[in-house]
Length: 344
Ligand code: KG4
Ligand code: ZN
Image (tube, rainbow, N blue to C red):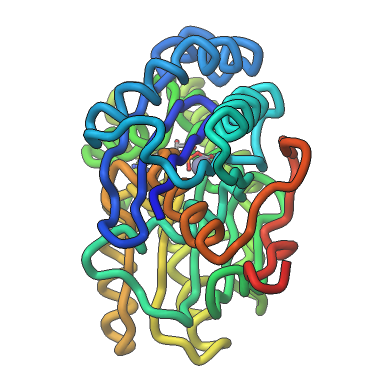
């Protein structure tokens, strides 16, 4: 089954074609980052308008890349949530309109299920069951995954997501949006011994996260350095390093704990923050030491993309799942509400 995937939940327009026999046939991405950078974050109305401008040409480019015509498609999948509702509606309406015109099934899929299963697009894909750490701009979650649609939430952030904390730290340090890659780059020059930031909620049992206290600690440190006239390049790099070390340590401790608690050995890490090199290095070492294995999506499939949506859509559409009636665009949608396709 050949499925077109459409992702428009936030600030990237992503389109891909996934074939359940031949794998990924094409994927294209248009990033709105430059447009939003001027405002220091995503402006929802501008995001929707840009998706409207870019989506149809991008679908055509993707089909051309795959050497396919519209009539070669067997189904269409789109991100139905969670995300910005106006942005989601662009993808949902386009998918439904196209599917109706072509007389093929259409399905709204969950954005975080896309991230969760993105490592399935790699040559060394993880087998079920596994623990997944989902770390994006809007979510930080640990999930026990027994199969497609069998998700048990083990823990999540009670306040800011890890990516959000990276973005806010970047703003404090005068770095550009999106902040994660910028903070990670600056941290490379930082001295790991100068500051030690707190590792929130690691000293008590449980698998929940909290990053807002760490954010406040970062702000207090930056303000103190500014007052002392020391918020120069070195000071900013040292703060970036201390912040990144604290986030990475916290995530590593909780992942280790989640594997111990579930008795599982495979760890999948996905979502924008999974692109972080130091996080990958630390997890690889720590998990291998305990006889476990780590799995990640390739770099460009860590952040938002159409391939992960085409993949999830293809699995579910091939199992007979489809939207009946109207399109879906849901800003909030807990991952644990998902069910396997045969149970829906
Ligand atoms: O998954 P994603 O593209 O969008 C959401 O679904 O939220 O994640 C975007 C987040 C942003 O907060 C961005 O700063 C962060 O991922 N990010 C990183 C890195 N690359 C992206 N954070 C830390 N290190 C990185 N290398
Ligand atoms: Zn995402």
